[in-house]
Image (tube, rainbow, N blue to C red; front, top):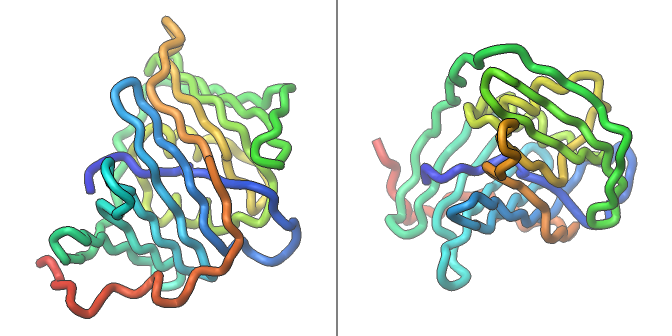
Length: 211
């Protein structure tokens, strides 16, 4: 449950633009030099479920259940059949100054044209490039603000201003400035717009609350 989830956290395949908020399943990979993990977002209305898939087999290792309307987050452990309340994190104060620029490049990712946004902090020796799609992914920024995550992928993304409501990064790469080495990457691999069943967002009655 302590593994880095995010963000990407990210989206998508072919989407329908418009006022209708996104509903469906978003599959994304989290990559570091030492590890690769598969994660999934299930989204419907004000409910989000984030699953981290097990390394072996097709099971779920752990989940977070996020209720945007009630402004709460719960963690779920299928293996131990436990659930509990997840507190909003307190980000560590960043050092130095953020430099945010919008690049001139675009990239086609899973059917979406994404614009390049670069966030750099020289004192932290970190630069993160986000490829952002404009769409109906209103849940994404709301989730970030509620969770208030302290990982740099989240903190740096929040430095980007004046992007349309409903925007979401489909790919992000965090690197060291000094040598260009990859620290982490979040990349969408699959999208399914089928609306999740209501049961997706319900904690099984046999699970015990962790106090």
